[in-house]
Image (cartoon, rainbow, N blue to C red; front, top):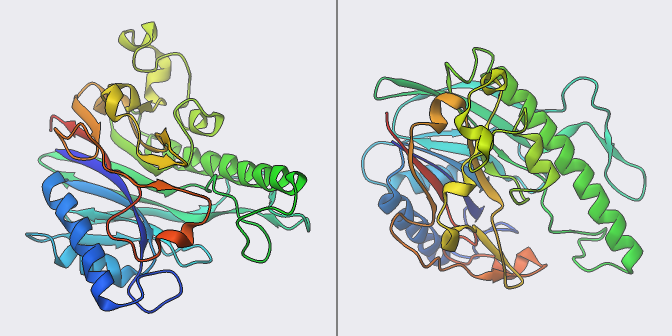
Length: 317
């Protein structure tokens, strides 16, 4: 069983303000995405930046065999949302964007506007695969790519840059907390007994504080001495598979020439010890072919493929 996550980068049908300008560019983008998914051959693929639900249906129609499409009902202000492509019919367990109780709204701009919900919905499904019942949640947390009032991507001064970076960090941390709360619901039966995965574009690297929020009790990460020693925290823990990705592939995006692993798969105790492989891009492909992106996302409007690499794990079923 192969489980993956992939940011599809502005998956819109043509003609709108964010997607390809014409049908030819749209079909080229779909063909590039479909070729990767076909070769990856996932059992379940969490996806991000689905601008039009119909576009994900179009993509599914280009894949061999029958695929099931599930999308969140909570898009952001550009219309992008998360979803799943699955070989088997999935059942929606949760589709939410609210912050958990006791977490106060966070500041979002210089005007003092606050928000009490994630910019994009958090979607969880249950799917039966080969005798295994898998519960999986997909998310797309607030970007580190900063935008400013008036649809600017450059600040007026360094004070504005610092403040907007802080607002983005507040939101990403709150969204990570909301995602961890959803993971707690999925782990209610105990991660040592249930197959649970949390995946998506977390917009931060492995050691970032926002990513660490997702792990649960610390001290048992892959590659640490505690990993091979079960304890009472295992029922609530999630393990980030990043250390299992070969070092030369340990990135999923290139920003201003710098490689970053900002897309993650985290799994429960029952799943982590059934992992047989992990990677980015395509299995067996050591050279990721990713563009280097800058501060203006509009520069790649209508570009084929995606500026992210898929991240995947292979599991014994």
